[in-house]
Length: 276
Image (cartoon, rainbow, N blue to C red):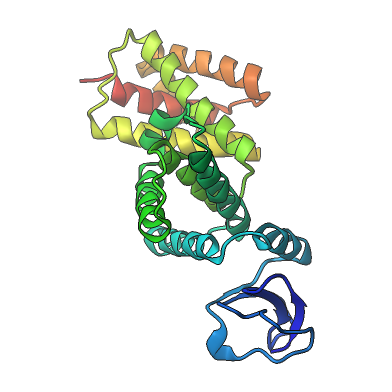
């Protein structure tokens, strides 16, 4: 491969064998080099293939002034997340997470504290991603000798979840708030009597996460099973009344109409978490 652009001493732009634009990272890869120079394969530590030219440009602009050690540890964190979750993760995470971690390190170095207001919710709703965030903090401390606050584990988790769902961060925060607000509605309606230690509570949270995704992605569950709906309406009237409150809240805050089928599933889950 040949260099098409030099970003800094350690990062260059090139074209791979399929003529795709790639970002190449390696110690001294761009040092005293020029456009058109050949790249020795043994020098390449990491090859980044973004989905389009715009994303490639944003990535190279961001990493141009970053120490290679920070870029390297962020890549290790992302690879660990991919290996652990075994899910598709949007390549935009190379931009969003690297930028966030660099900014978090700068805040620590300046002595500026920053708390995550959704720490509890993220730990509860996205626990696997939160554990990855804790591992990431350990990697940063080991590799860069910088100790980030534990709140950062939740921020890192949000970036990972955001990349899993291919949503922007504002939508991710809004989804987390929606799940938390629905739990509050149910908790208050039933006088704080939810069985939060049961497996049904965990399943309810999982259902709410997917429900929130559907709300923000504009997707709906539809069914013609009117018999099922009638059975639920007749058996679980109190739970259905609670779901009506949820429906009104979602309509008011998200301008989204919950289908009858969606309401029935919410009703069943609420019945399970309120039955000891």
